[in-house]
Length: 413
Ligand SMILES: [Zn+2]
Image (cartoon, rainbow, N blue to C red; front, side, top):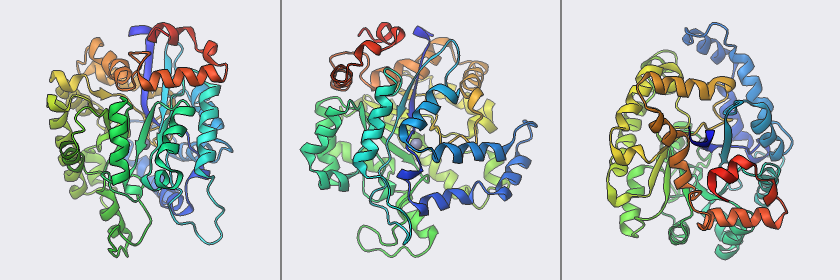
């Protein structure tokens, strides 16, 4: 691999102080002991795998006091993508839940500004290793002011912007359109959450007064907010054809038979699997179409990688046969959201082995793990706005000389 650099284009370092109780409760229903048992049953290949331990690790990470502690764990202790001969770059995506309702006795979340500050600390503690994206929630942007929001981006060395529509807004919110126009002009990359599910708003009232009484109603209403078709309509309507946009999660997992039909029936049924196939096809057609030359996708949070390894990588190999698609798929882990499914120490090794067994060539693997994200993030040009913004930020904090040699050589800076 070129420079032995691996870029994880999609991971997270926020802690539980950025997540409301209702959201955490939803998650904690999963890592119950009952579910652990189901998972253990499903997990026929790995006899030594302890699910309960995995959940414990996950809770431990989320409970860390500060965001920089989570980053420290990721970079130095998790072994998630790190291996002796590999230099890892992590792209943590911020998550802004400040517009979610709190329960009565629940302590307040750390304010958006504090999350920014702690993320900045994580970035300064790890020059060349932590390149974060700023959470861009249109309500927060309106609250702080558009120009002030851009200032937050510029002053703090962020690389890109992250949008997460299921948290309570449309991807084509007028404030966001303004932001995309700005990002397009300055080549700033934008990543959107793009699969059905994940975190979604707990709000019981929709954007136009719809009543969302049951949990199922809320999932169905908020879950479809990032539908890829909406993004293409928006790109066409506002001429955003040059916007660097990453569809996070590739529309979803298209999860394999095992998880779809055994035990998980209630969680992920055929209907959801169909939605995922549909979203993936829309994204795939967009990637193939040179009218949308700056579109990307990432393969983060794909449990199928672990459960149906062979068919997963054969499918991936199939996508790479198209020369446009080949240059626009990025490696991503969704750490630490995935740490209850994947073994931290073996994530990258398993990815590489699975890819090689499916006939993915070294050059294709290099594109997936490094080259495509390098272009998406603007790291191929020190004068690009995101990269020069980052370098100036390090300089301002006297950290530019702390950039590791492999980073300087790898990106000519
Ligand atoms: Zn994610």
